[in-house]
Image (cartoon, rainbow, N blue to C red; front, side, top):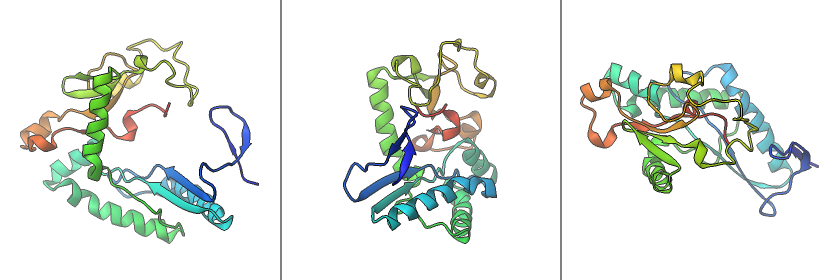
Length: 216
């Protein structure tokens, strides 16, 4: 019998798939701005053990793992080298898969790259802007945490002691926002990007996972 700890309830519960005989699972993948180190593969090894066990138990597994191939570090490094994002990330993506297989992990069934789904990201952000859940500040788009009262329910975040503007992230966030607890959905182009003549259609970038607090 396979059991998981339910993050919402905090209880150990028997696994019951939504669809009989099938499992759809997602695991966060790497940000391919540099070579991965052994610690980065801890999650991959855990997920690989889980997917192999599910397959052993007879489930048809569809495992999705994203590749984040655009963030501030990638953009800055690509600009410094005078290459495209694809040219910069290609060797790191290839090295990641080589190491991934070297440690014995099975490749996921689906491995989407962030840059291949920009239109979908833009569409979702536009819906959040229209609903008032997000706002524009100097060209960057932020999620307005106060618009969603249940935010933090799953991650058990308690905002009671958090004062707007008092987060340590203020010191490391290069963009202006209404509330220090809000997180970036889309980042405006930096002066460096503008000076390098980045085409308007490619200006700015979706915010990487490092910009957001734990998932709600």
